Image (cartoon, rainbow, N blue to C red):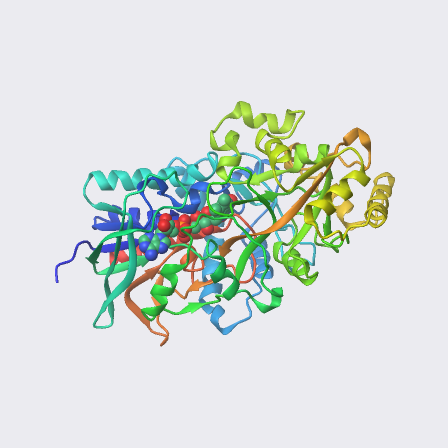
Length: 550
Ligand SMILES: Cc1cc2nc3c(=O)[nH]c(=O)nc-3n(C[C@H](O)[C@H](O)[C@H](O)COP(=O)(O)OP(=O)(O)OC[C@H]3O[C@@H](n4cnc5c(N)ncnc54)[C@H](O)[C@@H]3O)c2cc1C
């Protein structure tokens, strides 16, 4: 039967765009199908904050950060905790990915016009021993232009290929099945959805107006994860993290529906590590939502005090920015699915960043003038101030008694006692005048301020929480926010998918979140952050190059 293209890519997110542009550049014909309209091209990556994991970069060196492949791999393996037979390919991908991040990643992107904000962030700082979870050094490089800044070079290349006839887009084409003949994947079939002019990221109509069949020598599944489908998240929720949360908010658009994962699995592909996921615990309800249950993640600096629903401070080392899954496990063990930050105006001003390209108009708009205000401004960035004033999860009061009573009113659970909270804050505040310090969070704050990047824009000058000079007091109710799927289709280093019989399925490749960012879960259990977009880049690139060659 005649082929419509050499390769079909399912999904026009970052992984799909990277794969498709590599195929077109190799002189082959490629079709990109996506269930969403053209306005959503780029998928989740458009909304991303822009973090990119790089190792031993010029930006790190300029800031005096000493990093190298061995240290980064030690951190990666301590964080991933690979412990299953299924971790063979994930581990090989992890090693390859760290080498990519320490090698050609930056130059490859730079040659396409990608640029990096000069202050490197320090995410997932851990707090266990040197072989445990976390980044030993700052590695979170932010794309100048955030999410749109990483999509732009690949969209440009894709549109050039489109002009030259090597790449065809099929928007509003939703894949319902893979076509298999003689043991090989030979194409896709599915439904054509009615046109819909919703804004990027909004849920679009699912009304079917036709059907389609497309044939090619190979199909690359780059359809994203399951974070927008809370039923699937709950179904796959790992026992080690307790019961699935009753309430969750969504850190991804609704098109991250996981449907294509089921379709690919039904065609015989081997899905591994489906119980590994990366959800955040610092989610706040968006006062101006784009997608259903839209939540935003706070990227916190180290100083906010963190309390569980009963008012007990989270134990060391579960401080802001230390260990996302450790925090999630602890919070779920309390029997409640929310927790609280208590902080001051001085802390929110310097330490709150919101993950999402639309929440960072300075970096997204590539405005130096606006970005410099992060270091010099008297108030918090405008989007943070807007949340403080309009966000349903924010409470601002002049004194602790009023704050705690408003917190009880907001949760409706009445679990917080003023004396209990005040005693813990007073104890922490006493450590402020102690140069030796016993409180591990306060030690972390002092350590953070030894790094010039944190001192400049991420860590407030140490002060007492109850010092009125630094007020007003702020409480933030933190929800669990779904985001990334760490497991996925088992693939070799060419992104070729294994079947349930352990053999490669001819003609089938997987990339991006659908492939657990490579191998079926190159992160293992946890991430060092900024590693997801990079996982899309390398798995999409490998899939595109291998499929074009084959
Ligand atoms: C707000 C936010 C902030 C983030 N910040 C960061 C960050 O700072 N650093 C980082 O590394 N990562 C970050 N991420 C994560 C990262 O952006 C994503 O993991 C990554 O972009 C996923 O890309 P993908 O191509 O695999 O999937 P997606 O972007 O989900 O794209 C998949 C595409 O496939 C389409 N599709 C799905 N099923 C079908 C079907 N059956 N038929 C046709 N089409 C289909 C979808 O419509 C979609 O367009 C962030 C994500 C979000 C949402």
